[in-house]
Image (cartoon, rainbow, N blue to C red; front, side):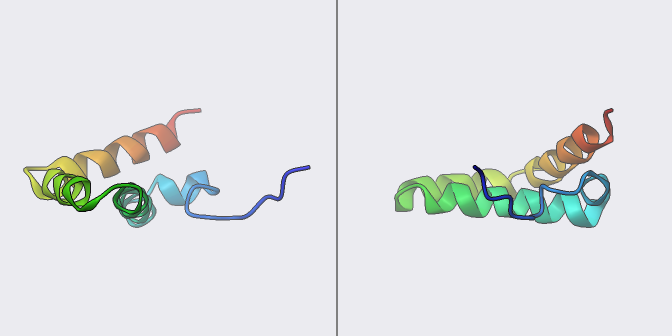
Length: 68
């Protein structure tokens, strides 16, 4: 039996808005940074700040939340 816990990914309506999608993107980056060593963390953070990568990730999350 699984134990369901609500989180940023539990509510599609929230993810379809900038605020919720941005929170989910930041949460994903936080989890990715926690999984690696310092070099990996630096690379992930560098990727996030390059160009529009973080915005593009947010927009992809919003787009996925809007699809039915």
